[in-house]
Length: 279
Image 1 (tube, one colour):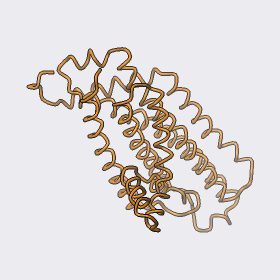
Image 2 (spheres, one colour):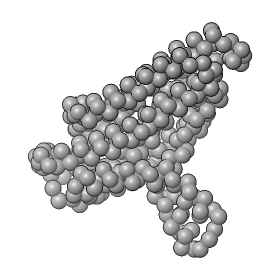
Image 3 (cartoon, rainbow, N blue to C red):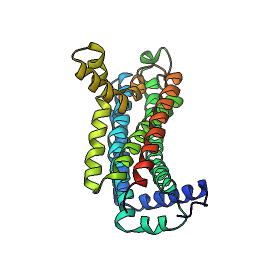
């Protein structure tokens, strides 16, 4: 690459756009999206059961649980597939033979995956919000005594909960892309990506072990795990949705900064790793 060529945000955007277009043509994205939409949309059939106000919390938990599960599967699989398709088809070699930085390639692929996950979360959040708010209106008419304090669901909180899910997927996508930058196979990347997902969900156990003490070695290992991997439990601020508790937007902002810090650090590591890779 000609070193006189400066870094270009335009080239990053073009790579991201092409990544999004490629993802939209993949059957995996369509399958997982339709499956998640069907599950969330099917929640409206619970309107035949008189669960009262707790029904809204149950439906919200079901919807965001589906978003987390299918979103994680989509993020790991799509990130690995979109990256290795460029390597296996030799399009990455052709692209990087042009005046394109490897950093531009990495950031473009990552932003493309972010656009995919953002589309996924936005569609599911919109559908879930429609189902929940419509069901809440029906319940308030049928059982006003259960809503003496007013509505338990607010549109802003539902959108915020979807944003938290997307932030978590953004961190997971960054980890998966980091693995892909040095991995030789797509299968290894996918398996490792899901392994990272489990570690991040159980990271709080390492923090608890470190705080309780024990051997020095155990404390060091627990401390390293707590430092290297984010705590995905911090993203579960929407557990009170449907129960009347409003979303704490100050904590949402702090979680956003927390996620952004990890994404920035991981992307730098990914760029460094990919620069050392033989293509």
